[in-house]
Length: 78
Image (cartoon, rainbow, N blue to C red; front, top):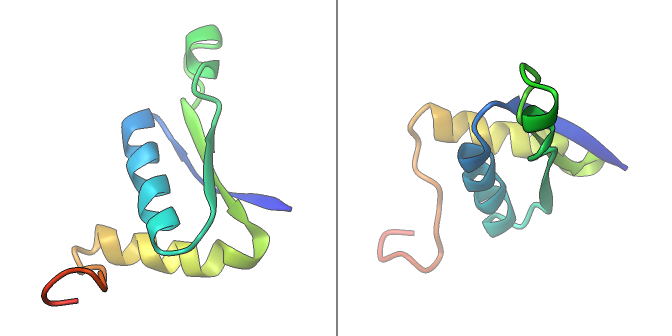
């Protein structure tokens, strides 16, 4: 099953967050991109993750928002 990790008004940010999660090995999906155009005022998109990945995904995004670096095994410092 999937769980909503975040509702966002910015579909670009949702896509960036999704890509970040996927690069960390957490499957994620962005849904509802067209709903705001149809039903103005609703959150534009939802970021979904698997139930079992929810806590790890929240921690990862919290670290990103706090400005902490993400370990990248391909980077010279990762």
